[in-house]
Length: 119
Ligand SMILES: [Zn+2]
Image (cartoon, rainbow, N blue to C red; front, side):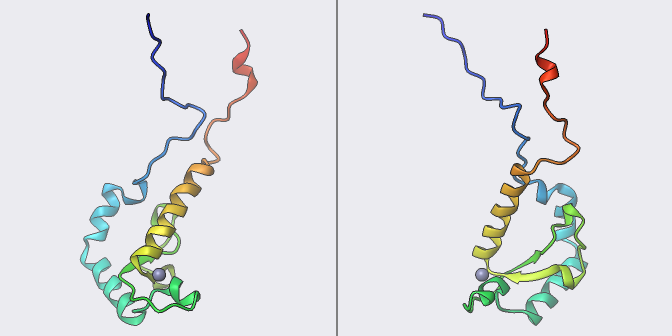
């Protein structure tokens, strides 16, 4: 019996780009001497995870996070845009942001209308 292969394409969903926050352009930045200097300074000044601290927990910070992601226009080196996080809090924040990107497609994305259904 012939089978019709099902397509896994879902054109109604925005394309998911899980690693878009870490593009090749950003990878070069994260290896730069100026980032390492700012990162080390941030961890020295704020050695405790700031998210855990807000919840009354004391956890050593290991990751410096951009509060507003640099791909969304956040300043790369301004300490006001940086926070010290533990890996767990950083992964949780990254997952939330990835989900937010998927749930909120860019406003410039073409909208589907019923006009395309006309013969
Ligand atoms: Zn934490």
